Image (cartoon, rainbow, N blue to C red; front, top):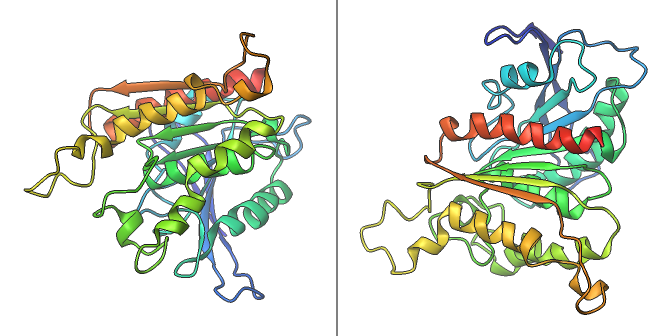
Length: 301
């Protein structure tokens, strides 16, 4: 275990780095490092425990990718606050946080190994009411997938410029070129794991997962480097897809079929922000602060 004090921007917590060891029984085992942020004044004996925020990085990142965000987390929850949070940042390579032949069973590792390990090792609030997700870009894809697929485990999610596409991803995206969905890219695997495939089962179960979605109005569409852009290239823009996701979750109303026609139907809780900027930390940092505040509203409830 590597332990270090975390300094800067009024952050007085500390971080620890660990390794989650491979599954010996898996045909493609996976091991990865993860960093744990413990808030200022972390008390292993505190009666109520601490909520945990799982941080999923974007393509090409690792367990250090969230280091610039952690001071803002501490500043939001404060010293000794009942809302002080533990944060866990695993390293996922370019896995899209799913199980795949190329990268191994990352989703299984996070859900069935990492989460229980954190609950054993630290003083956590072990239920869904104290467990949250945040993801940037590729990590936004993973955070959304986990929120919809395991709503009994997670109480909310923050998606920052999420790399989601309601239909097929653009040919130049890492989802296509990176191998997580097959080499060559397997459209059937993509459709099976993509968020629209999870909506029906999500709507049929009792939990609602609040989701905060943010993207920049000049965000990436993976096609900007091409000279011969198709006329409909705009539909791949992350801000366009963020709006569509919000519509699917909150405005389209997933629960219509469960209520009488004409009756009042509750929407799945979600908030959307389209802000000035691109696919950069200058967009994500303030979005992260607002998103964590959004999650804590539900934690207090």
